Length: 440
Image (cartoon, rainbow, N blue to C red; front, top):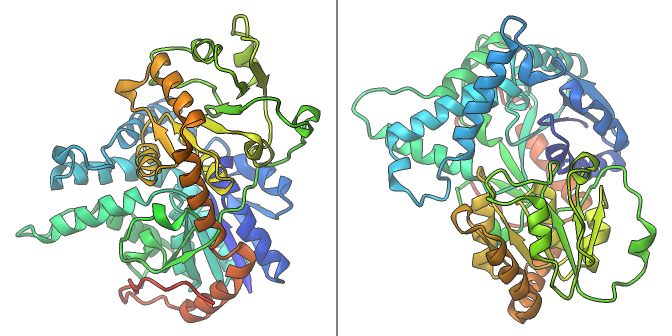
C-alpha cells in the first residue's frame, strides 16, 4: 500500500514518525513524507522521500504583513502554551475559556501550520499519488483533510499526553449542554477546508482524532479518552549522529545528562544556564550538558565536572546516565523512559506540565514547577534521583512496560488491517470510538 506521512515542520515532531515510516517501507510499502520545505533536509537525511508542500518560513507566509502574522502566532502560541491543561484551575475549564482556547489554537497554530497553500499542495499531491493511508502528526490536521478529500484511511500519530483532545472533549460536552447551537471553531475551520476540495463532504470528529490513533507513549502515561488506539513502542531517532570517542569509555562516576532544547535556556527560569551549571558543580557526578555553539560562547568559566557538548545522540548517551535533567522535550522524555533513566523535568507549558506530573505520579522522576524553580531546588532534586533507589526501580517498571509494546515492525500488520477497514470512508458517518485491545 501507499502511506503518506504528514508532519509538523519541526524536526523533533518529525523524528517521532521516522521509525514507523521506516518499518512500513521495509515491509514493502511505498512511503512518502510531506511537510513544509523547512523540513525537507531532515526528511531526506533519514533516508525517506520528501514531498515539500506549502512555502518556506510557514509562520511568515503572509506577503502583505509578515511581521504582524508572526506576532499573532507568537502571542497566540503563548496563550495556548500557558493554558491549564492539567485542570488545576477550574476557571480555565469553563465553556467560555475552552471556546477561547479553540479560537486561538485554530488561528495561531493549527490553521497556520495547515495553511491554504500547504493544503492546496498536499491535496494536489494526494490526488496524484493516491495514498491508501495517511498518518498525520497530532497537530498537523492537513493530513486529515487530504485523506478525506481522496478517500484514504487516516491515523493520528500521538507523541505526548493527549491534552488537546481531552480539552476539546470537555468543550464539546459543555457546548452540548447549551440551549442553542454554539460556535465550534475547529469544526468550522476543518469543515471549510475539506469542502474546498470535496464540496459534498463536511467536518467529522475523526478529523481531530484520526480514524484511529497511533500512540508511541508508555501505556501508563495515556489518557483514557475512549478513542481507538494502536500502541507502538517508541524507537529513538536522533537524526544524523556520530558517537564521540569519550562516550565509548565507561564513566568513572555517576553521569547526568542536562539538555534544555535548542536554545539551552529556560525562558521561565530566574537564572541562566551558567548559574545552573554552577549549582551542580559540587556534585560527585559528571554533568554532560548539551548547548549550541553560540550559547556556549556566552558562558563564563565551566565547572570541572561539566562536559559541554553541542550534540550527542541521546540513544547512546542516556544508557550511560544515572539521571537526566530536561525541559520535557518529546524525544528526551521518551528516550529516558525507554532506557529506564530517572528524570527531572523543568516544564514550561503546553503538554510538558502534564508529562512531568505523570512522571512524578509513576515514580520514575521529579519535576519543578515554574514557581519552585531555583538552583538550590534543582540541585536537591538531582541529589534525590542519584541516591533514592525508588526512582530507578520505577524507571525499570516503565521501561518494561514500553518493551512489552509492539515494535513499529510488529505494528505494520495491524495498520494494514485498519487501512483496509477504513479506506474509502468519505461519508459523514461518525467515527468509531472503540478502544482496541493489544493485537497479536
